[in-house]
Length: 122
Image (cartoon, rainbow, N blue to C red; front, side, top):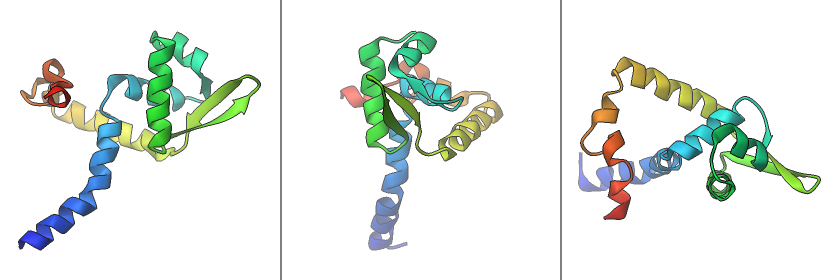
């Protein structure tokens, strides 16, 4: 494979990498999991997930910017829902991979649970 071919592959894979980065936070995953069961307001998500309102709002903004959730005004609040129902399949596939690997990724010295987020702090 030549260097230009490798660069084309990197460019083609960049959107997929961005998708996985958008899913790379436990709070965002929890929000998506909850929205998979139906639309919710921020206050519903705060209650269901035990997260601060500011945390939920910040992550919803990220997920909306990534095109994964959508919102519509309902009175003075906004109702959030999955914009891409296929994300449920992605999460299900991830759970299957985790089960098949015995959750080995959680022990990974680079991306494991104890190192989560450290690459962003460098």
